[in-house]
Length: 454
Image (cartoon, rainbow, N blue to C red):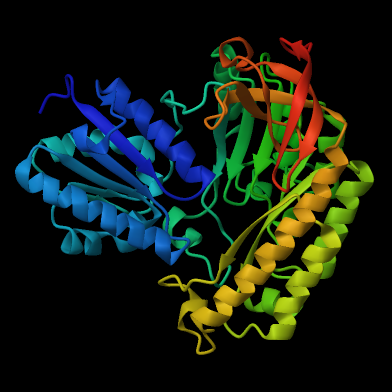
């Protein structure tokens, strides 16, 4: 089947890794001659890049699929693809549930999309979920932004957190070589992007699987080494990284972030629970005391650093007292942003079959109480910006007020100010903050800078 004038649409669920995978698959489809369609109902190829971290994300996928499956009865030429973590987890069971599907592919097969689609166009229904060694990626991603870009540095995860399905669906850790990562960042810089976020499910594990150790047995390739190695890429003004695991977060990494001017003072380090017994049952491998020491060390080096995290409430067996330990941690640390979730049992994970599952009412009550505290603390943290001049990288127009543009501070606070997006997109603007809210700021432009000196 030819792909000339065929249109595609991708819907992405879940994390930044999925967003990066979707951008790469869009790049492959455009290389194949497909054109992007904003409206899924006008597309000849629909791709759902799925997430299985929470149950509601999975249910959403099935409702979307139902609509497109109906469409396929009227348009037999429609190609329906499910990729990502639900695809990996469900595999052939997805085909039994939605026989209209053409291709089911796990995250490790992202770079094989063209070959797999060729098999579909040859008349096959394809399931690709077997473990593979991830091929080095040479496809130019079609990136949703023209200012900020994601760069995968490590795929997979070797951790075995008892609530998490990621290791089952994304496979073992596989680090890309520093050279391949730098080459991709150089290309991003040449294309005019100003900021990169280095991504990994557990980014602090970067390099553990790469050959090469020092005489003392230290790995030559660590995330810290990688930051030093890519820091001077021309055109790139800002570097971020996510997601960190407290077990592997080192003082050496914190020191590098303080020393390297392009690395933003923003750390995303999930703690999941503030109670040691719950952390143990989650198999997280650290205590709340260790987590607090990490944050203290960051603040010693960078007192103003932004800290964001993830937390789960209602984990099986969590008592009211244990939940209150999570509240205490949030109260003591004062996060700039916290992604919160009620525990949701995932197939194939140990915690899903434990007896002490909490009621939905208890989980919902705890989530509301945590979110209320998070908003109060974030509003307190925002106060420090009032009247200050912050550097904002302009990304887009404010969709609610076309006279304003929006971007982020180095600490990742969303900031709005008056300006013309055509003039300011991709520029670094000094903004005096005049209004603070829990999760965003408003200000007045003071000075526009084209770029930092290299």
